[in-house]
Length: 221
Image 1: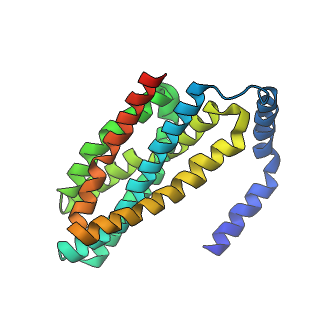
Image 2: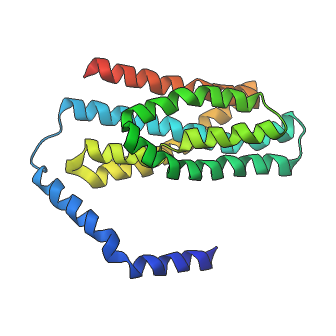
């Protein structure tokens, strides 16, 4: 894995100008708007987008953490089976980010994000109640639906705060991922008190929190 990282690093260094040119252009454009203060709608929209990305990370890390516990301790399944389910979920999510980006550009970022939030609930539900080969199918579907918006929310955050591209990127990537990891601790408390199945079912309702946030954002603006 280290050798692969070194190889990618060399490729990036040799092609650095290709990557830095669009960034420098974005910074020049951002400097033109630096004097413009953030509007109320910008603040509300960005706060809601951060909340959505945090809940998405919370669900993602929660599934990666509790799928093995559920299949090994409660269903008495094979540990290798549980590991393959998690791998399927994450690999499908990586593929979803590649497929989701051009689809979001074609359909519209807001529409694509809202559609994925709505689809998250049935995919989580079907995955939880499936078994055998279908568990892998719905694990892949859940990973693609849930993780495909990762790059999208980052771009949306940068578009909302063109005056502060660095802060927008840091919040959408660094803050949301770490906050999602902290959220898994709360799921751990639920699992200790009421069991791992309850902790997993708690994640089912989280996409609805995101949809409600979108509704509140529209009303506020």
